[in-house]
Image 1 (cartoon, protein in one colour):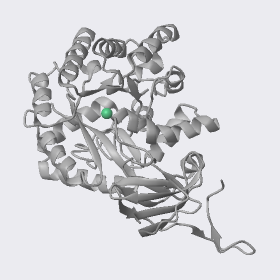
Image 2 (cartoon, rainbow, N blue to C red; image 1 turned 90 degrees about the horizontal axis):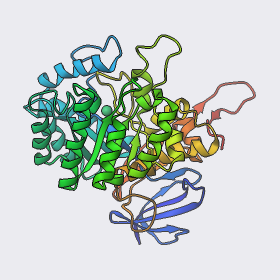
Image 3 (cartoon, rainbow, N blue to C red; image 1 turned 45 degrees about the vertical axis):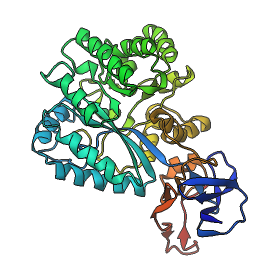
Image 4 (tube, rainbow, N blue to C red; image 1 turned 180 degrees about the vertical axis):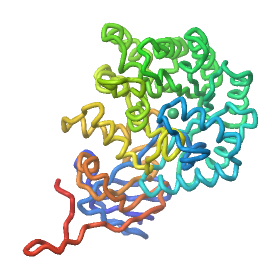
Length: 421
Ligand code: FE2
């Protein structure tokens, strides 16, 4: 007897299987005839492990237009706007916006998020707010918090001290932003410093690294060195890495093996990178996305992150990781069927690997999954379809009716589905 049985779904690898759930764990996968207290009919639908977002800013989310719109559309104006907002936003306001965002995430089958929390202001209200949100949503959504010195580890008087304070308060991951320090050397020193902090405390490390069009921003080289030195491996992630887009190819041929050797992972954020980068260019305008396929060819784990939804840096967003993968697929030109399928894997399994989650659709795994109105991962990318059911830790947490269009055309069917596979 299962508590919950998901019947007849197609898994991402194409196999058709029932999934039996007992408590918060997957008990069995296959042709299952045992009775269940609750049954979800997923016949013909894609059943996938939940979406995962390894790069987000939940302290800023749903604040678009506060204190005013980002007129230039640049990263730097966004940082300035956020610098004003973080000192006037209350803990309650940040908690309310973040919890609303988490509702959106759950409805889209997004059940684990790593969010950078700005530790720059001495009041640390963002940290306080995000710790509260993490505790509040823990029964159904896994949040990882990163201590993120938005204005630089050394560029403000208390930058370093506040990162340490945030870690003491319970923040999970060490952050960093070397390209925003005053000099290249201080950027490199910040990486050496932060790597030691992560290694000494046994923490993960996720750095906003080289989020710039400047091909001479080579902090990822230092980061890879420090990851290798301390043996951090897959516990370390380089976020954005956009300068790699503009680097000299010969230098990149030296760099990629060093990144691969370190075992670190990479998190490009295509929605944000394509809108914020290249803003100083005339034509041709650079895309600003890092070298995704080239890193994957070297065996470097690369996920897709969302970064922003309705905040000083990004005016759109829906908590749908399929939107993120769809944009990434286009900008990185990952159009071969195997590459499109990989884009789906990136926003599920690879992102879960980057965050170090208990994850998967196998017996013994935590029972979290999403049922999509699509037949295959590639069709899911094409349609960004309705999430018909979302199960988190053994409990059904969201449902949505199948949304087929009604037609009134002579001689044509009166219902139309966009599904094709
Ligand atoms: Fe970010």
